[in-house]
Amino acid sequence: MVQPEAEWRAHLEEGRFMIQRSRSTGGHVFYPRVMEPRTGAEDLEWVEASGKGVIHAVTVVRKKDPAESYNVVLVDLAEGPRLMSRVDGIGVDEVKIEMSVQASIVREGDKSLLVFVPA
Amino acid sequence: MSGSHGFPRGKAAIVGAATYGIGKCPGVSAVDMAARASMLALNDAGISLSEVDAVYTSAPYEALGGMELAEYLGLSPKVVDCNRTGGSAFEVYVQQAALALEAGLIDCALIAYGSNPASNPPPGVGMTRQSPWEAPYKPMAPISSYALATSRHMHLYGTTREQLAEVAVAARGWAQLNPEAAVRDPLTIDDVLKARMVSDPLTVRDCCLFNDGAAAVVLVRADRARDCAKAPIHVLGAAHAVTHREISSMPDLTVTGAALSGAQAYAQAGVAPADIDVVMVYDAFTITPILFLEDLGFCPKGEGGRFVSHGAIAPGGRLAVNTNGGGLSCVHPGMYGLFLLVESVRQLRGEAGERQVKDARLAIAHGNGGVLSSEATVLLGTAATL
Image 1 (cartoon, helix red, strand yellow):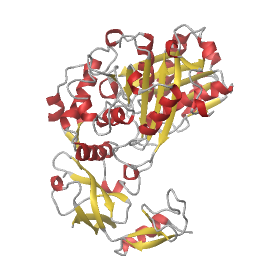
Image 2: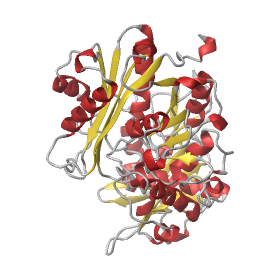
Image 3: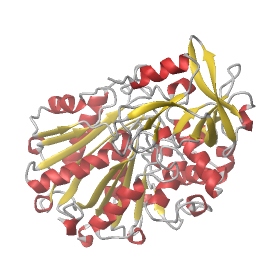
Image 4: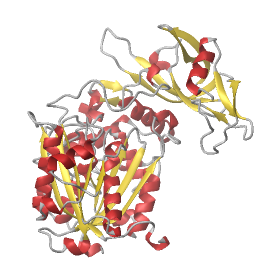
């Protein structure tokens, strides 16, 4: 039995950003599942994501001092799926819709986290 | 059934409607409030509690709230539901109740809700789990999800923060005409723009209230409705669409499921947006009326911001929208959908006092749940619309 979330996290801990692809439809799937949404295709395999993406939407969560404000974005992956993430390496107010970004895996606490940086 | 578009037009009617405890309602539990509103609505209808054979509620803190309210009222209903489509649940209940009434499964449906988070803050753990695909990025729930949709609307259509502020100011204008509204002090565009930013581009004044309130409505078949205390308000259409759970899976951030539920409800009712006298659309945030006015056909996609400008949806404007003051200025105890229905009924009965829309015959009540996830549209009309 495929364990979608656990397998994805295991890949991420190994420094790899993987997404799923259906062998029959060629469609890419994120977040990981046991079947492709809409088509119902169950022949999903793990493939390495290109990591290329474009900012689809952005907000900045404004924290009161001394906590730092941070951005939250939706990224359209080159492969098609959209996901939530954060853009690092740039001021919170500099993140713009249509900006090209590249995936990056950072350590946060004791876990790996998928973020994006300007391409 | 093709001619009916899946709904028995006008066959069920709302005959009782009530609110209770709007603003602050300390010292009681949520189910106390729901029961109080239930009795007020039954008295409004002139129907005895013992006639109720279906109970629909969405309890704020109790996953098994349908059974809780039935027990509290001392009923043994044939149908109980406590659905989890968020604030849209109550519009869905109208649909389900109308179908069950038409089928003869039930004879009298009670839809009730009470919640007092302002007086009785909820426990830290809610009834929903955090998405493992979103929570690591710490979006503020639910405002950041709506903010993301807003950012997209601004990017594609040039919608401005001033236009968002128009929605909040219009709601306040209506609230000032409604003695029941919780917040009635003056509010200007500038006040909204200068308010504390929470999740760009939404400030604290772009957000709905989080206060106490309860409401209830009673539905029966049209034949029984003729014998009730007040003029029946008929259910002409009711349709529902769910497009996602989390914002990252919303198919199009600027087109909600209201485009689907609205189109179906209009077809069921045989009416068009231009026919509607009173528009009650869920205003969780200032972006939501803009999206729903577009998706429900009151203006073209992308024009919502311009449509609401210059006081167009405020008292005296071109379209009466959210005449009770809305979730932004009247009441929002967590799930607001039932208050949309009560205000629609009051307007169609001519009971709305200073804020009364002249000769109101048709109202649309549109509920929203989750993060633009669940959209449910109800069309209500007076006997003249049958």
